[in-house]
Length: 294
Image (cartoon, rainbow, N blue to C red; front, side, top):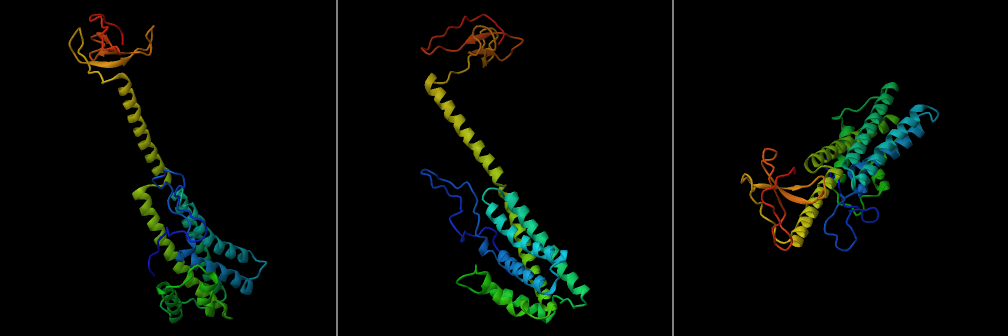
């Protein structure tokens, strides 16, 4: 069965692509999400859920815990695939976690069907048995067919109806085991793709942090440009009037001129030479020889 894409275009409601409708928006912040109804994994998981409800109502005591547990495990499979797809826009970690939950729930359901066959003395189909191969062949043909509407759960049920509505519970259980194996295979491919994307691109939080850092650098450059425009051409660092070493721009920490900038010798504390910043009119108010603590 071919590998499916875990991010299909949305087809079940309004646009969930994350594109901003605000004027001036030039990039997409949110990842594509939704569209889970077109996922083959979701389609088969829905058949498994509906068939499990039918199987339990027909062949399992409704008062037993097994009845409720099987139905809830089947429900968790499809619902977590859908929820993970919707969460894809803002958190790939949540999407990955929910798809893994779906995978684990269906694995639990698989064991329940195997237990049923064993406890009732029924034969479990081998993967190479003709019955199992026939069920798998139907799924393969379904993937190759260009259907007008691939999101109709009733249409998917009808494909497997001759097995799922069979009077023999062993036929129904074995068919569902085949369908669960198919869904789990698809989910394994989906999980692998999600993991590759996360390692390569990071999650939404990581991408947002990178975007924020880039914006901060842009703002810092703009602020620096504004300061340069206000004070004129950036002053070249002078040499120390005492030792001749290049000077560094410092900020006074105390005293009457606290907060103002001045030139301090790069050899401080050995050399305490200082020079004031050049005045806005271009004059130099340096005393040339006084030293002071930067």
